[in-house]
Amino acid sequence: MTTKNPDERTLIIKKIAKYKFSLEEKGPQLVKELYKYYHKEEDDSFISVIHDIPGVEGPKKVDYIRYDNPYEAYINAQIQVVDALIPILEQHIAFLEDEEDIDLVLESLEHSMYRVKKQTYTDVEDWEKLLDHLPEDRLKEIINNPKGHGDLLIKELIWIRNYEDKWIQK
Image (cartoon, rainbow, N blue to C red; front, side, top):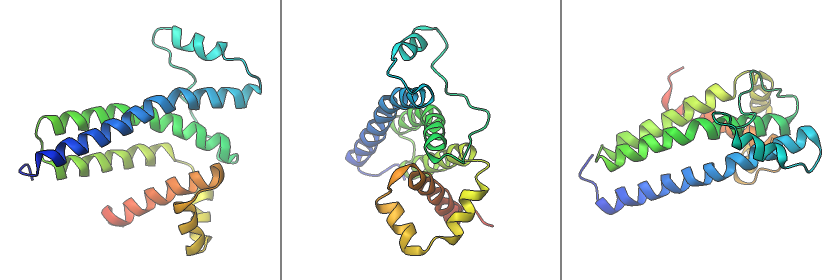
């Protein structure tokens, strides 16, 4: 519906832009955190050198995420999600600025986010099985107040599952 209030369109654009900006700030922090985890030292020179090399943005491409370590798995996955979502957010902001239908743009954005997360969180059968065995009150607690990287990983899987339950026919 393109006849929605222009203030609503502006507000949505601002919210998506704010989310994009937060991801742009979060990306380098995640890379730095992962580097420190792997190297257990306070050496920031690696991060600054990585950003000085044209075309290289850091250790962001991982062929396989090891999900036996929730900390490592969550940080690696978030780096991939951040990298993939920034251009998607830019694209959807442009759609809104070009007066595209707000509802269709938001639906497209949600679906694009789902595809990114679904692709990122592959090979998580053990974690998905855990979702089936956690009591409903624990799942609600994880959604509302995740504690630790394992809970954050489960929260992402809950989001994926909720999207599939809502939109994808099984």
